[in-house]
Length: 262
Image 1 (cartoon, rainbow, N blue to C red):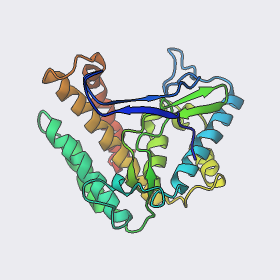
Image 2: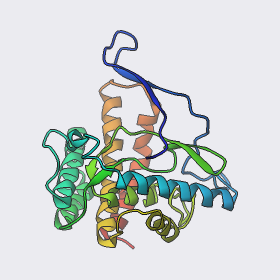
Image 3: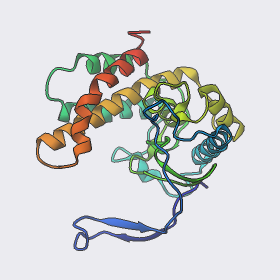
């Protein structure tokens, strides 16, 4: 259905690597990252190559959202509470999930997060389809050779939810630097058009706005979770410590998504 590496083995025990792990077949390609160079250069300079990648990017996402997850026996991706009743229930669960990460990791008062959670609760969408959601669909999480995506990676946040959650995450300011191009590929409207043309589910700007704000909340919660892991001595990954310097920027993005600043 989508470009994923072939799964070869899954090891449930921890004897080999200290934790369960899986092994996939090797897939060729490099990973473009959603950040500009020191002089503002794009990670992929050729506009035709970016256009081709964006088409593949949108097409894979549309195919994922059309995937018949009930027939594939993936209802367990609804989590411990089971399959969400509807899109509103899925949105409510998403807000509760990231509120939990935030509460477990925050080091003190977080007024912007508190405001964002109030906004999200007030804006819960009333109707939306349920589909398989990747959860981290963006530039930086795929392999490519030239203008073709060879594998979509990083499926650890996959769940059942609203297709607008993936689209909002892919289009978030988090992944477009100082440009107007989601993932530094093409303009937002062009990417949304590609998704629709590829057979994606109906686009709803109101739900996109809700999940755009959730994206900023989610990224902030991921950052504070990494900082908490560093402070508790559970990781020595210096990238977690770097989140301290990025949180201020996330506050600005959150304020923009919440409509507090222009």
